[in-house]
Length: 587
Image (cartoon, rainbow, N blue to C red):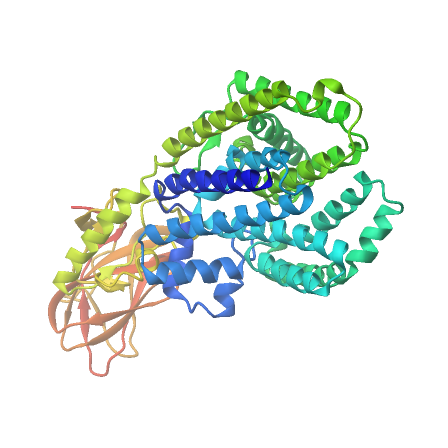
């Protein structure tokens, strides 16, 4: 029997990898993935500034390093990230199987929590999004592994399990600060195993026997909390407890509960947001019925099961509150709780606690004793759950594929290769907002997103050939819109004259608000050199100058109603004419 159960377990993991492989290779880069790509292309992978960046409240040096290595090996090629998703999922699933086996052995009941963990849609959104998976999947593997090492340490008192558990825990922390919960989960699992086995002084015994693991992991946790407080902007934390409570409620009613029945079945998406579950009433009712039946059967069949159920509920609440406190504001949409991407660790914890509960002593309940009928019912319910879960995964993939990034990046790669043929630099510019918005600046600039491409033009703050990428990533000739204009200059036959140490101020016909503006400068120079161009409020831009009558387009960040130009090269004289200041647009 044990060999058969082991083979079925391995087969289930293989099936999960097939499903997740279809999901991974059917997806593409999205949002934070592009931020990671831009940072990996413009920074040293081993620099502290890169590894310990405050990434939307996350500290994830391991994720940044792994992601940076993968994207540098094959820039903007999705196969590498997709393969990494499958490999990381394999590690997490095998780690969970190891722990479930340590708790239950190769008993058939092991398959119940395993099936739930492998196929529930609660873990799908956090897997499909590469940047999120670089956080969560290594943490899930570490979570399950450390729980297994804690069980072995308490059983055998062999210090090597304390050493390996501590090392794996540190690895989990490097990928996701939420891994700080691992020692507490592992202690709860060990203590509850003692409780259901009716050990005397089970809490004290769990602490004493596992102390070689608890003490170093708690020290690491304290050190990592200190590092987190230094790196992350603490103003991200919210005191909007009402919104946090609303998000928590929504995550249960529209996320966790439907997920118990393989929901949510349906998803919605408004680009550029990620999909969120919109469970119909049917699956919500099925979820509540599933929860009620599971709790009723557990209480009817098992003794000493109460603390295990309370631990599951407690973790379901505790694992989400910090996230929602960081995300809560008056502008937060409740759909955030329906994205389900904050729940993968809950899946693993529920599976392990279910295994602990199955170890509890049985109550006399003949109708639940082993029988052909019980086996048939269990198989039928399990198959129905898997089918429901696979349907939800399929509808998620359909929604996840509704992503303009793939067409944009593919078109942009071809367009940039064409642009490189002219030899002129390309004016740095923002990508389409549906791909990456300004909140991600400077990673939303083409100079960051496409920095690693070998076949592309140089990106610069000025160019003699104005071109742009449209909303589909295609290359177009461009012009400067007339948001403002430079007023005609006072010098006859010249306009505005500037020479070294003699800057000239060119007034505009109106003020400019803070933004990244583009100015068209038509000039006549007597020799080759450089000039500095700036707005009243903004950093100056150094612009190459060629002799003769020329035109150059300059990207100017800042605000004001005057443009200042100063020749920087000895004996250089430049006459400048009036021209437009605005944004770039197709010709």
